[in-house]
Image (cartoon, rainbow, N blue to C red; front, side, top):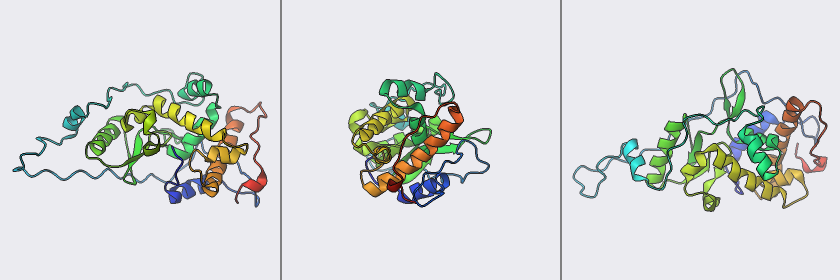
Length: 258
């Protein structure tokens, strides 16, 4: 994802829920792992294509989802039924695996995912979810099969698939990293691609706020707002999962907008 200014109103809403300035230029830490009643996500399914006229000789015999899936030869729909290990507390989680291979803190990757795709999980906790994407600026989410079907339909009819999966990787700018957008629904692929985008951005500057923010946009103001939101979540997660460590990511106070 995402060197692009996507849906700033959505980012502003999310950032306001996670960053509560205690001063004019300070990062705040807030709990995001458990909430009582987060605002529900707005679910908008991809608009179905119009049905072909029966008399049209060039029309597709059937545009049912299963038929469409069979027609998309480049899409690998045989993803494992078992859900991936996305528990940040697990030593064998995807976050730990990709973090180790990419040289990034798994908690930082998880923080980006929380900002990008957080959803209410069983038990009243909040966590990132892999089964969502945006098409033509509309959000599609649900269970794995539903989201795969909807993306197959969108791809079949040439709709613009945008932010995909748990890290909301912006497919139009990173199509060289994967065969097709459906591949990005695989959490392992999604997090791996996102880790490279995040790492590359952090290597572009010594300013950690901007470096993290470049994952979202290279417009300085947008990058700072986004970086501040992610780092606020990151600091809070470190206090929850690493109570005995004092590792800090320094951020110049003057670089953070209130």
